[in-house]
Image (cartoon, rainbow, N blue to C red):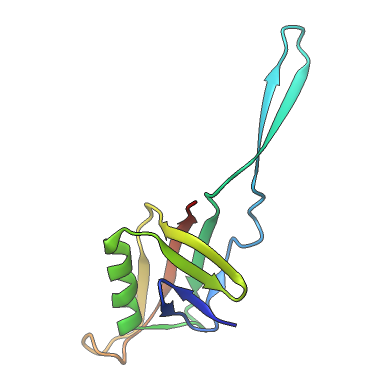
Length: 123
């Protein structure tokens, strides 16, 4: 299964941690003057969170991949997120990028990182 953001191919072990928690419906309760509760439902368009996680024990990113992800975040443009058959237009949300070193070799391609990034679907 292909996993990528903005053309950057991600490791197979990448996890989409909130993939199944998004409902896509907003409920707003209101009360009538008589005190009866009315619940309004509205389908959401866009805004789906995408949290990508690389676990320390099994999913590492290379130095080059981390640099490419940082550049993509700095560009502040929309890009395509691909998760197998799912294709979403996304951008980085306002959360900081989290990358921690597993192994460090003076900023070479041998460095390995784990962590997470947060994206949000745009329409």
